[in-house]
Length: 265
Image (cartoon, rainbow, N blue to C red; front, side, top):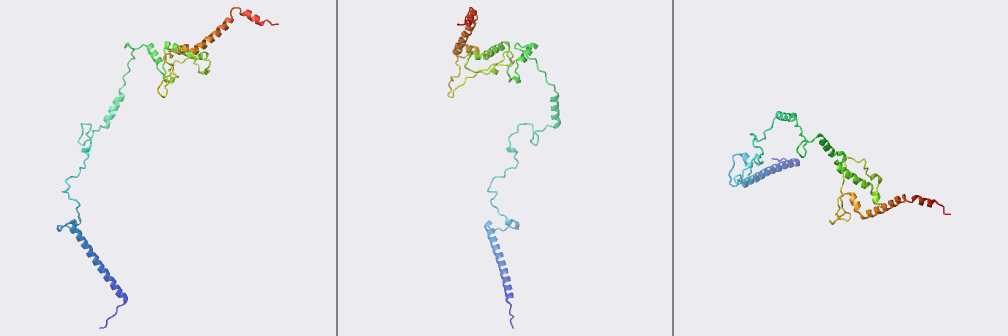
């Protein structure tokens, strides 16, 4: 029989289809073998599972080997003990209703405040109107930097100190003082107080030479000026000058003036 010759295109098409089918079968068989090896490695006893869904299940660690239970999701046992004893079933503090709170606030606001009692003195008796007025006068005021109001005895002492400060130019001629810094003794404020200069210390903790010693420190400014030797010497010299001027106005003053007016020729 005559054999028909095939064209090169038909031979090439048949060869390609055969190679594709062989590669497909080979790859499927190869994958099935790998899957079977994996199953044998997981289950070495060779027992087959009836459920196909369980074939894909792999247990990493058995529950029996781990003997610890999972922790509870209820965290209430980890909280500290409550401060309140009367708790309801839900372990919560019983909330007060809004009406109870409104009534308590209204009752507290409507309650009138108790009147203040009378101010008592040292003897335990209420103060009179004059004593109350004196107490208000002595009380400190904010406008005067909370300075107290001194009584008559203290005010006289303060006036004496202020007069000594006003006349400080006559006691110390080598020190200049501003004129507007002089205290007006006649129109002194009601709220006034005397200050004390605190002693300064050196960096080494010793006393400074600028501070007065205990013997030099007196109770008042006048006493300190009287005890000052330099001020005492200057005051004595000025006193002698003033006495000489007043002495010239006495006996033989007019005679000396006439002799001074008499011409020399």
